[in-house]
Length: 150
Image (cartoon, rainbow, N blue to C red; front, top):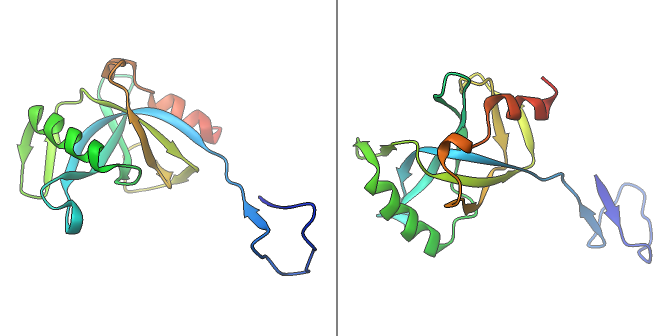
């Protein structure tokens, strides 16, 4: 949706500095399943997070990845925390025990054949780690699919 300031003139077919694109924002508490080693300015840090929701059988289903929203302080903390619960490292992806919960904001869901739940998050970004929440209280796949009306 687009909105414009009341004092700004309207120009048919034109969008200027007075127009603002407004997107819906949803949040979920998801479990970190793995992280990829960063590159460039993030070399030596675990950056791109693999995110999952709880399945009915108690496992976690991957919904997508994100590296957005992470501050330098968060990158330092998460690298240390994730290495402490790592189960494997192939030099690119570090798989971890599903223990850390992260609050993720996103604009919507889209269908995806790449991920087991059949959907992925659009424009996902990390808001914060939920150190107060255990993984067994993270959002479920059912909750995620309900956002699409499925």
